[in-house]
Length: 293
Image 1: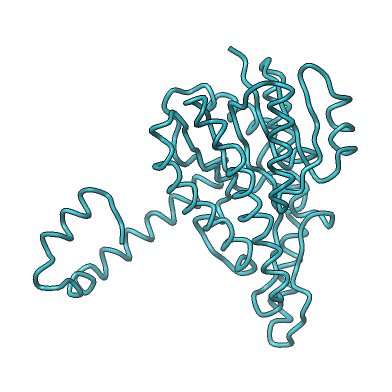
Image 2 (image 1 turned 90 degrees about the vertical axis):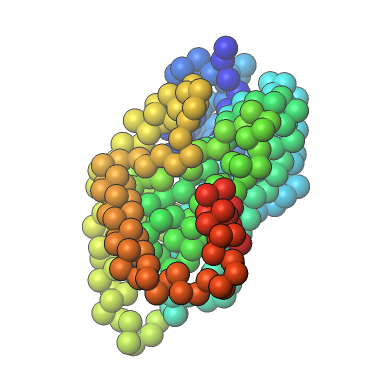
């Protein structure tokens, strides 16, 4: 049976290629973005297969309205792809409070808005898939990633938590962790840097910007191939909670896992000394149950 997809940030990049892959598979797609004319340029006028909707994910009412319009046209939503986002790759002290909040408003609270609008639909259906596009930067931090990586770490924690909350309703959540893909992510039309200039960071800031500029449109990842993979995952009965996209992502995430394990092992003896004398058994039971807090 064909599926109905709802894709944010679909005018270009990963979002556009995911939507095109779903259409090529015979599914129907609601494509959303800030500028409807850009969506129609990418997907042609609306048809019985495609509905283009203007959506600023930072506006909760717009998210609710877009979901209502999708239901009015297609009657259901089977797959949500939370893809809308951008990167502020400035060094932390060179960014402002307003820049940090803007990064969170789109990458985190915007994702919340759309998910909150779609979840009641998926619950009523007792079925659905959610793909939350994170990044390798959702598991690894680095210079220039203090804002962007923080938002993607938030997406990871949010997604892992709601995956457990909604599983009983037949809803499956997958966190997509792309490496470097050949999109406009590093283009001047998308990426942002800190607006402050601090002399102590001048050399590092210049090096980082040159590094990102050199990667622009020269990344290894193929967005069209990722789109086809997500269509495949949407058909899987037991999709993964996390999906690393690209050989670079596999290598970087593998390295992070190994480093975490090594650090945990190195400090294990000191870590366990913080247990209360009367709670050792409780801690063991909690660890076995997989709960936190």
